Amino acid sequence: MKTLITGGAGFIGSAIVPQLKEDGYEIFVLDNLSFGNRDFIDIPDSHFFLADIRDIVKVNGIITQLKPDIVVHLAAIHFIPYCNQHPFEAADINIRGTMNILNACTGLPSLTKIFFASTAAVYPISDFAVSENHELLPLDIYGLSKLTGEHLFKKFWLETGIDTIVCRFFNAFGPNETNPHLIPEIETQLKGGLRTIKLGNLTPKRDFIHTYDMASAVSKLLKLKKANYDIFNLGRGIEYSVVEIVEAFERQLNEKIEIEVDPARVRKVERQHLLADVSKLKKATGWQPVHSIDEGIKDMVNSWTR
Ligand SMILES: NC(=O)c1ccc[n+]([C@@H]2O[C@H](COP(=O)([O-])OP(=O)(O)OC[C@H]3O[C@@H](n4cnc5c(N)ncnc54)[C@H](O)[C@@H]3O)[C@@H](O)[C@H]2O)c1
Image 1 (cartoon, rainbow, N blue to C red):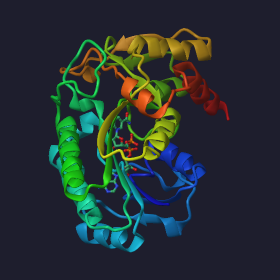
Image 2 (cartoon, rainbow, N blue to C red):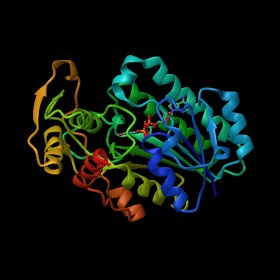
Image 3 (cartoon, rainbow, N blue to C red):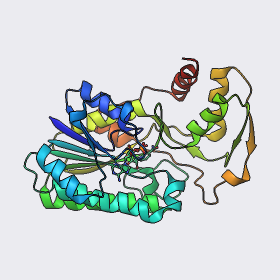
């Protein structure tokens, strides 16, 4: 099965590529390497397309020539502070880029399944675990652009009847992080030798899921028979506060870490909770996450001395 992964050289892509290779898919990656890294993925140059999803001519050429059986669309701009600072670029890549991919896939006789990486950012602020049928109310341009992506994928399914899976990713952690999210930010400061670290908001809780668990979920979702159009949350189903993440680093380092709140890093609009109800995904696929926060952070800390 020829499988094209857009944005496959990024953080989450670098976990999905080896998982799907192991599953026996023939993997091709389309990425402009704006955030991703060619060295993250072990695929031959003949299977790597350096291209921008905003380039409709190039995208059409690649997809119509390749004739993939499956397309996994990960390419996006997704670091929320970056999107807020560059709203037109974020909208252009996440909406127009997505339209280009779908346009090239429409009428492709080989295509049997298409997968879209959406986000928990499509949900409004909520104090409890959100399920897929929760109200949708993005707070920022990133969430808005991804929700538009979901609608575009729904339209694609209505027009083609091709199995379409939308997966709302919660907060990823693991190796090859490409954006200065919370865990890599803590890691960078600690790795540099600091034991008093500067962070922004300390109370928000997030549902952190290891990219290896995300990759195994994507693998199971791609095997679903007759998915039609369906939406799944992908999180761990457990939330951790910033302080709890720092405590996990303390356990692995066996050292005390002090936190200083840096006003420059404090976000004015902040969700206190972001927790996934993942019962639908588990029921449909039998998927279970197996990588804990402590295990992931242990691997990070061990990699500093390697
Ligand atoms: N990391 C998270 O916690 C998280 C959470 C929710 C959703 N997501 C979604 O998952 C997907 C993957 O995210 P990630 O964390 O791996 O981010 P990432 O930035 O590491 O990966 C995105 C990839 O897309 C590529 N890309 C960006 N713009 C492109 C363009 N114009 N043309 C071609 N390629 C382009 C980048 O080079 C990168 O390799 C994204 O769609 C993101 O919105 C991520």
